Image (cartoon, rainbow, N blue to C red; front, side, top):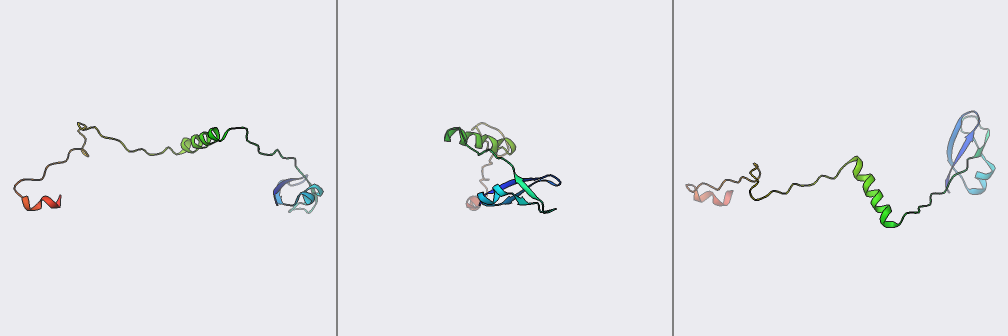
Length: 98
């Protein structure tokens, strides 16, 4: 069963599960119990192709939380991550421990 929106004159809009036949007759308001009429709704039909829909979804997802990318270093970068000191030659027994 789908969810329909109903409008109570006293308490405003509320939503509830109902069959099509029941929704056409109206449902009682959860606050006052008066029968409330169903509101017309527009079906959600997409006119975009699947590729454009995926691109739009991807753009919406990345606009709020951008994807973190790893930085690639050049051989002559010079940053502390790229500066790896060679093991000291006086401790040859520690070469496997680096």
